[in-house]
Length: 381
Ligand SMILES: CSC[C@@H](O)[C@@H](O)C(=O)COP(=O)(O)O
Image 1: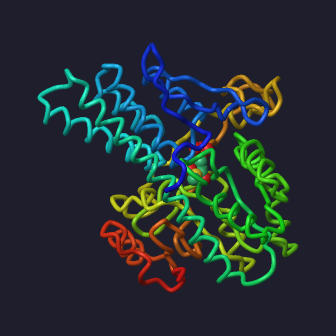
Image 2: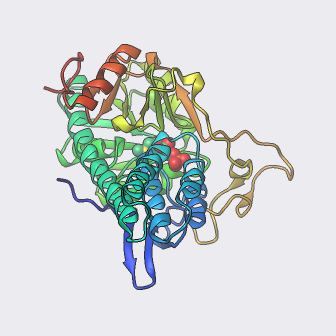
């Protein structure tokens, strides 16, 4: 069983009541500062400001948020609705929230209320279970992903390109795409990790580089628009990214800037691999067109988000203006990559390749029955 608590978030029982403690990701890499949430509005603000972020971690945070509301005697249904709506694209957020809300409701009905705190305890137990499951899932992602890479790019050391941040900062365990990179590195096969800076909020430059440095990986940060030159120079062996929502047809919503990488990878004949737990697959959304893409404040684009502390991110409106006053901006947080550009989707239940609606459905159904790793062309043995 993987270690339950990564550095990104923990539940704490203080004398004055339970709290959810977050590592404030807006302050990294300049400072490691903890943010203590005692109520749901504080957690919603942390989610929307990206103090806590990344699909799996949003699910865990949402789950604990419902448990926090229950433990502190707030209106659980209202808290769950506010949390589930805090960010629309990452499906894990609503998944974690609704799962714990359901556990609370069942226990509440069973005990005829929550006088004895049994429903709140059930909510917390469910949140902890989800946290553990994510850690375990991330172990399997790392295993399946590194075996797949060995098949796709056999022998020698690898130059891997990644976008956004998908490591221990977004997970109960090792993370998704960056967890695979870490496994490759620990196996002595990582020649270089190319880290897209990931404008506008610099999750790559600030967070992935922070994790890569701590792991002793050979890495270089690049401006997002330098990726084309890297591919043209033959410097990329594979692209590894995470996902915020995968539709039933295999379309992948991930941090904006992912889709252009998939196009580049296809043009240059480089594998484009998505790494995500099965919980990120949303079979109720049929195609990529049905995925709601979060639109964020324009100031995140018209301002350089590097604050006076250096390396940290200010809330929108707190950075250095780099466009004319009043400039309009286009700032989608995510884009959607169509399935035909994705070489493989690595999940904790096995690998989907080629990516088709039938293969996605088959893997999800096998995962639910606990019989995955059975049928696709590139499944690890
Ligand atoms: C395992 S993380 C996968 C995605 O959540 C990640 O790539 C991403 O897009 C995160 O976006 P963010 O806006 O920083 O929450």
